[in-house]
Amino acid sequence: MSKFQPIREWPKKPIFNTGDTLVIFGEVFERGYVNGIIDEAKSAGVKVIYSTVGRRDENQKLRKLSEEELSSKNQSPLINLPLEAGFDLEPAENGISPADQLKDYGLKGWEDARLDWNSIEDSYRRGTERFRATTAKYMSQLKKMIDPKKNLIFVHTMAGGFPRAKVVMPIANRVFKGIGPRYLSSQVFWESEIGRLCEKSFNAVTAETFKHLIDLSSEIRSEITQNGAQVVYAAYGYHGNEALIGDQYKWYSYSPYLQGFAKCELENISIHSRAKGISATVFNVPEILTNSSSIFLGVEVVLYPLLRALKKEGASSEQVSEITSTCLEKLKPEIKIEDIDKITQDYLAHPLVNSWPKFEGWPQHNSPEQMELMRNASTSLIEMHKDQKNLITADLSEVVFRACGKIMFHKLGQTTEPVLWIGHDAVAKATV
Image 1: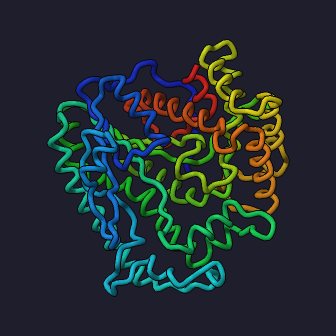
Image 2: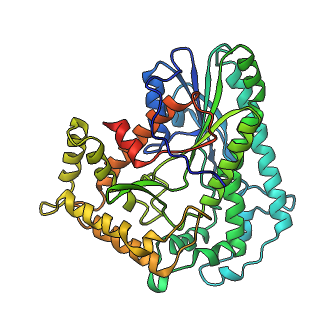
Image 3: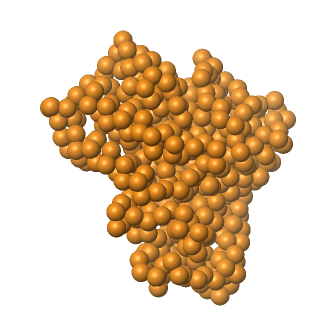
């Protein structure tokens, strides 16, 4: 298990500058963590090379981006090879994919699903081979685009891995959002056949792609390091983070975070790589709201205390004043920042939350009481806004990913740690 190592300070100046290259291994979408480090790299004169996971056509065949899609992304240069990871849509030798195996299941009876694991293992093997073959081609193209005498930064952004079958998301909605009669135990789900498939899929997408990246870039890494420059690898993890609870920064984690098992494996890959002398670091970043995190009801609750951290670290800061004013404008006229703070502090100080989850043995599964408490806090906070689709958590998320980008960019190449945590204290200090 990783030792909790929060970042308290970072170098004032990054070591990367003009002539160096940052490679995004994964696709860049709006409202994602990686946008922060891209901004930092560009401001330092570092070249950014983009990637894509590709798209699926009407026959579910994986393809690269079309010219129209490339134009709309406005990301250049971009290596247009489909780096989609995972195996859920990969036909096995029998022509059946894991997603095909799930198509006859619904919300009734999914607990009794029995899957063909020999077929799944075959799909997994084929999916891995496809991904590694595409990554090898990717590295061949990349080699032509970089200066072998300059530093190279790989940023791994791949995460997720829910099997693309109709039954999965309705089950997940009950696991991550359900209360009362709609509550579903994450442990019951995780120990089911479909849960086991999700675990294998999460690992393939979230964790193992980091290993494939490190393995298949070895030739480039060897050439650059022999020339006296650095090759570093960064990945985005999540393993809980510190938030300001009362007057102390304390570790807290959203639960149930089932992808956490794959995030732990991501950390292990980084640890093993460091042991081999490879400069890899997983940065465990705070919760934000992204396009893919909306399924996790309550994940945003711990974002609100960032306002408290910003005030603590920079009460007289102009940036903090601007952020606070922007947030206040989104709240109902009768609501104050103090009202938001009280709900989040009461929630975080609640005995159940204090004991759930724990860093040891993370991630933990949910309980009916815990889910209801989190849902009530989330609902109360959302109802304080003028527009429930225009929340202050969007602004706070931007604060987080910009600060994380700054910290990571300055820390990369100047740390020997395989796993680090960025808490609300670091986010606040980087902002003010």
